Length: 124
Image (cartoon, rainbow, N blue to C red):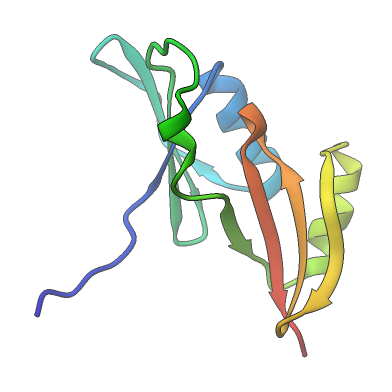
């Protein structure tokens, strides 16, 4: 049986540079150099072991089918309180939480382009 691992999540952004800057600021993400491909700007940012590929490819707007899959991006922190302090410092919208349950402390925040991001830390 082949071995699998997550390679990346893909964020289609209205402003690829602003989206990349948001991830860098909030998560202290490492950012690769932007490059052009297929008429779009591409930037990869790395949040721990998670890569977010950000592009600004042309779109005709949302289609119902585009929203039937994944609901959010979950990012685990080893210091939830410090992460939430950074969220508040940067004025990031908190959709829900923080709450405790299911073995985790969690909060949902608004990312660029209204991407829903779940911040989480394993409960002690």
